[in-house]
Length: 408
Ligand code: NAD
Ligand code: ZN
Ligand code: ZN
Image (cartoon, rainbow, N blue to C red; front, side, top):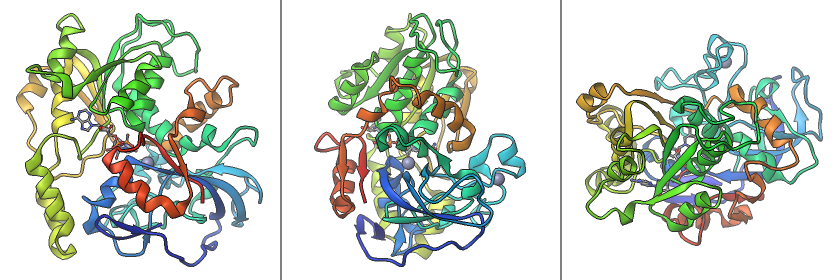
């Protein structure tokens, strides 16, 4: 699946990947997710893409070739590949900050660890919506998984699960429930702290599942009814933002939390939030400008659509935490500093450190009961040939598309 221009992605035949470094492996991809982050490349981040770039960063598959220094894998093993590429041995990786890996950082652009299939900002590494994939630093990154469940049980270890997991960890939702820990307990006490998840796409949905699993009260806001319905089905409380009348999202949250606001808020929307037409026009324009003009414009003066973030600052209680997991890319975003300071907010954000959490999550996935509902998580399984149409459907949130998985 190659990027060819803004809103133009196409299936092309490219050279098969080969081992280039002893720490590489090559896999035959059996499943590969489509992510909200791919949609940013589709339009907003177009200045940082080149025609022919292979996209996709949520792959799993079967090992076909193994580099000389990869000792934990053999040909035929089943592996999930983290979306960030990290070495496992640098200062950052040693501190659980794999998305800041100092070996794969992109210093030319001032960005963190390289990502599979994710633009010049993140290393321009060929991605995983493909039949075959070269996995750099596979000696540390590639996660070996058992063969006794369908792909979807494990696939989301590449991105959705660790991202949502980190969002919940960083949200620092107060305990009080019977199981607030990370040990994968089964009980679901209801007296834990309250978290508001803004956005019920795959990331928000999974973050809600994880918070519910840990015994917290979960409110979820979105504007797509079937997305909200999925979360309600697992015990969350929905807030449809098209249904607010004169109230704001924060008003409704305060109403449901003794006037105080949520203990923690997870922004699982990011820079393409629904709401502000003006910025949307700027994004469109940046996407259409020639790269030499658009690239510095995005880096120096770029602005995000801030609806979800501003609603998060408003809806969190005083002294609470906002965990920003949705991606932002602007350099000149106006923020309500007085409100943020006065409410004494804690704000955490960033790209998920996949390997920081993957062992804990894998232990949970290996249980028989599929406690996070991963096997029923995807709404669509499609051949790669249908990817161009699937990107469009996913962006427009049509056809009930929440999580699309390609089967190359
Ligand atoms: P998505 O686009 O499917 O989900 C976004 C959801 O937000 C949609 O359901 C949309 O209807 C909803 N929404 C839009 N505006 C809203 C508003 N104003 N209020 C409430 N809801 C609103 O994408 P996704 O795959 O779930 O990803 C969500 C975000 O997480 C994206 O920004 C993605 O790039 C980011 N992400 C971050 C990481 C990370 O490592 N931090 C990893 C993966 C994805
Ligand atoms: Zn992703
Ligand atoms: Zn590293």
